[in-house]
Length: 163
Image (cartoon, rainbow, N blue to C red):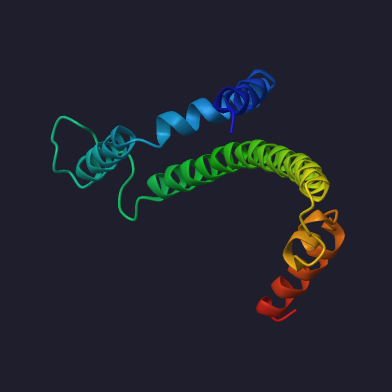
């Protein structure tokens, strides 16, 4: 495959990102780190220790049962979930484009290989070789029926999921 072509697909997808998608990707890349986890742990420990009265120089502002902390944590979870979903949706879209490109290239390649095989078969017949008896070769010379393949795969997938 052509790695530079795949990179250009990624670069093109990155260049087309909206401001919100760029912000979501940036946020996800920053919040998906060990440092963010450590920062959260330190923040929550300071919050709890302060509000339990274990740190004398920090005044208690959210006494047990820590309603404000619960609200902050809930809002953070909602915010992070939304940001991660935005980034995942964009990444899935890029993956879908890449997958469709791969499929189209595979179909073109299959057509080209079939054409080359037909030319080689023609040359073999010109040399007096009997290619008509080779059933596998005859099958390979037929055009690929994508619709039939899709239908078979769909039946198999539906059968395996119990639909």
